[in-house]
Image (tube, rainbow, N blue to C red; front, side, top):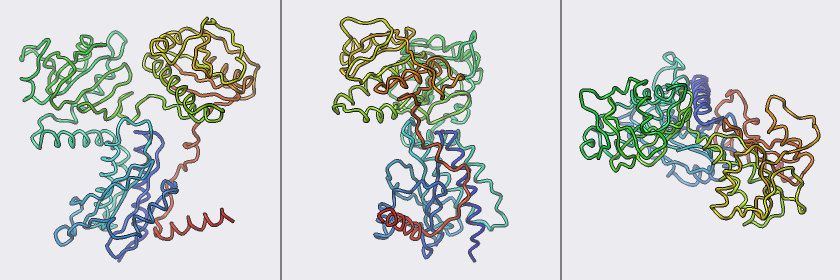
Length: 487
């Protein structure tokens, strides 16, 4: 007999753990599931934060336009085996990452979460959802009296495991099952080294891991005597050695246990690389970046501003499409240069018919930002105190500009001079957009005396407390809402 209260509790706790874990890894995230425990059950949905709203037509077609949405497992062999799972096709819904499976305990399940635009790779998140499939299958094969609620806790703390699983999958694809490097110790060492200072400075440079069988093909610039190779676990020693490869095309080479030597970074064989940039670093497999690491934990964040607010703000002005696109690319280049070099700066995008007056170093003639060498010069000038004054013709008219303006009610003294000057200036000059980059990487966009913010995070519920409901009914509710809006 089906225990609906047990299933509801299991789903709520699993979705909550999944959502919380992914929010730490990728930024505020939602999660949802569509499932059927048996072939004869009606499909149900549990979507506490309306993640799947807007995708109703595609879901209607997928699930009620035929039977091809599920490739079931052979239950005659795997009826009570939770870890024998037949993967289900990714639904390829815009803005979402999904992963599903079929097992003996659960005929069909498909998990969903947000596809954040600023993630290094979707692969760790897909591994996360794959584990959610496994956990739900495990919980359903057991009696409710044996349920501990631990699945949500597993998924909440799954970040390092997701990166591990992703690397193992990649290694298996390229090398087969006889991959020798132990991944968990490697991941722990990468974080340990990232937190180790040398004369008060965090590490810079690359550390590359190779299978021992490939070391004979490497042209080492310097190779250490085998009996004296530094242990990977000696974070302080490895941190000192990184000084020999920082800001260069060289890399420390490790076999997963010791530092073997120094070689050029470009390696043909399958390899794993930790690229340190001070407090921030990136982990890649081959040429593909999987994730970043910062403050002792892994993250999917690229740590580079996407500047959606700038793109949307430019649409408010009567600009030719090519001008708007080129302006966005110019601002993105300048912002990313400041982010990469870790300095604060300000850019004034002046779209008024008559040039807005700014107190700064005027350039005669203005610099043409369409030219790469002059854009590079503008990037260098942005490091000088004050703002760059850029007009709609994509020329830089002045640098080191002071942004004046009258005091306004929504100032925030905790945010500093650049922030509040931008508020005042855009309040007084409504046909300008101001972009402020802080030295610690946050980017703020201002227009008409307001900071432009993505409202997505503000609309998310903090609790995951809704019950599953039939998918057909959920789709009908959407149809009724549409009819109501039409009336």
